[in-house]
Length: 204
Image 1 (tube, rainbow, N blue to C red):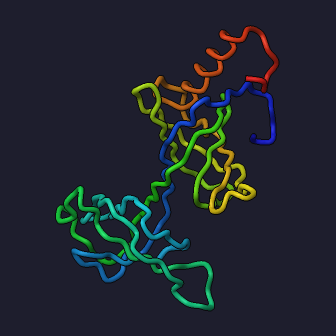
Image 2: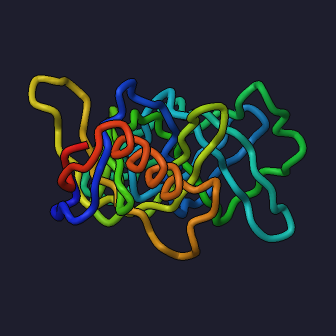
């Protein structure tokens, strides 16, 4: 999955769904109470959900939904003007929108296909840039498990339309706590080995 098979891995019998949170710096332009426009290095996907976090004296986060995305300039491919609407489930009036720097966090739906102590394989409907750092949250057995991850690779699924497989490597910035994906993966692999007896790495 990640180029090396040194860790036992476990295929998830019923694929688990989760959220991959990817953050990027943006510049807020012409904000109002109904819509905020930001300039980003990446295009947005209409309908995509996320969080817009402002800094400075107007610090705060607002849940948003992307409505449109278009290039800032036809001659440039490294920037896009993204229009986002505050989501109805939370009031945006608590945060005053002003022009300036902010952080837009994309909330991408993914399916967990397999996992190991070093990383996991997910399916997503948008391509991911290699070396992207993100936070992955999976709901499993009534609990939420989260870890920071690095995108090791991403490939389109042959014949799958707009679907992609992505190999994610866990980032070891802290010890694995009970609510981390690393701990969940360790337990899943251990349970699989207990059920099947001794087996070689990579066969679970």
